[in-house]
Image (tube, rainbow over all chains, first blue to last red):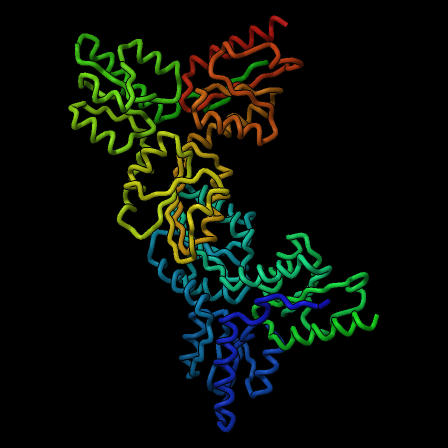
Length: 288
Length: 288
């Protein structure tokens, strides 16, 4: 076989759950006139958002909430900030929160430390919706850092006790460095390893295929953090890897002198997109 | 100046305290017939042990406790295992425990977690007296590791909550790596940074001198963990460094084509030994 899909590619548990919740609501309300909205991207995958829109979902932003007629409001799997949920409730939206249970766990930890003397540190990308929601769950008490270089901004002293929570799809390598540095700068450090297990398993699967092939294609949304990290992980491990969002992005140039190709995908990448990429690559290899 | 002693070389707070406690007891009992014992090395420095023996202290081992006439028993600054303290008390020794307050803090943390569901991990050298005492204070519930390579022995799962305590003189770099790895293998990790502040300050002082000299002489007991780590730290930072215990070990060969020499010493190295080393090096440089 010249094209192989890695084990554990495609939807993780939390994404599967979010999409099935949304699909179920949309399917069972085909005859209803009540509008069903999705706030932002339910998952970081444009094909899935398109699919849900075809089923009748209306994509809106937080600013739109006050402008539209209230209805059902599907919230993203990355979790939503508490104040957005409150605002939507006040405006009489019915909330369907698809937050991933693993993200929810991190939110509960963040929330549990609001009243404590611990400094709360969220390790993640400031602009990622999961991180924004986590920050809201800490009562905006947490500080967010995304790299070792930002640690000095925390102004830690050896009298400080610190709680560290991490974005479920954050880079394992960078997280390790950050933990070590913070633990040495503070008195007591409590680390909650909220990096998702699916992330580790997906990497293992991708690595196993990467060792057998000449080039790796990583499929996923351009703004999917876990897909980008998966691509970087393969590159950091010394393998050739390209990230694409759609089969149309594949060109012959990517496969010059290539015999075997590995494919993997992020947690928010539907298997049918991965399968389509596989067929497309097989066609390119055959047509040479 | 061709020979420079680094800032913060020599006795740390805990060592100063231990020696002044022991000296005081010995000096104030010069006319008493009650024997005064030291169990093991009060600090890892042979010159200091010799000095206390000259003042009348009798060095004994744990096995000797049952063989000698009871008297005052000076326990080391690294801390003593609880069962040894109990045994000595039962045998009617009067305990003078010189345990360093920073080591004591680590012991209290170790002790506090005996009844908890946390797995206790002591990061340190298995054979070091401080680590042996820490282990005893955990009710022998803790596991001891000294390197990243030993982490698999802990058999951690993502259901495990872990408490990490570290030998006060352990390698900062290795500790950082260990924390990161453990935090990723377990669910919750509580890290108590019990590496002593004096260790950091001493390194900073040594580094500052090392940048100005051609070779570094690190003075300290052969079995002094913090002295060995200090030497390794300088070597790892790219500097030429030799560890010696006594001035007699200095040879002309060490200073071939050397213009400037830096001297530093471990936490248990008396300043008079460091000064003697300085004079000895100056003589060697002058005689060339």
